[in-house]
Each structure stands twice: as structure tokens, then as C-alpha cells.
Length: 110
Image 1 (tube, rainbow, N blue to C red):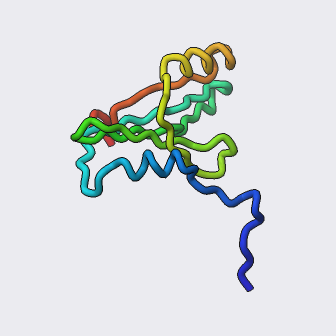
Image 2 (cartoon, rainbow, N blue to C red):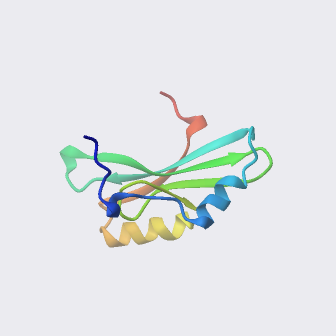
């Protein structure tokens, strides 16, 4: 028998997040994808990185920012993000061993 996950694990978008998502017109063209990446250098031989946020920029000028939620259990949609302030906070909080970078996915090589 399949059981539903415990209630505290169910994650849903808030009304504000749904409004941000539905504000994007169906068929809108994405013109740029930017990702924000944490780089952890706490162990020199075991540096690792992960994508924390993805920003989608659309042809009509709208932007949608998807991020890991605070509980690390799913995604959230952000309406406001100050990259420079967060980068400064993270660098100070982790004494430079963890940093935040911003990259244009269209300029990356695979």
C-alpha cells in the first residue's frame, strides 16, 4: 500500500509564488539563463559546488527566479534578490571558504 508522505514534508507554492509563475505568458521566449552557484572550499582537496538559484529572463523583460527553499525540500519562487548583498554575507559568514558566483549559462561550455 502506498502511503502519503508526512504533512510536514508536503511543499506547495504560496499564492505570491503562483502569481509570479502565472505572470509569465505561455510560450514566452527565454532569452537568458543565469545561475547562482555556491562554491564550498572548506576542504582544499574536496571543493564542491551546487546551483542555488536559477534566473530565467524572458523576451518581454520579465524575470523569474527559482531557488532552493529554506528547508532544502523543494523550490521557491523569488520576487526580489540582491546577489551582491548575499555574496558579501556568505563570504563574511564563512570567512571566504564558501563563495557565491553568478554565471550566464549561455556563455558556459559543456
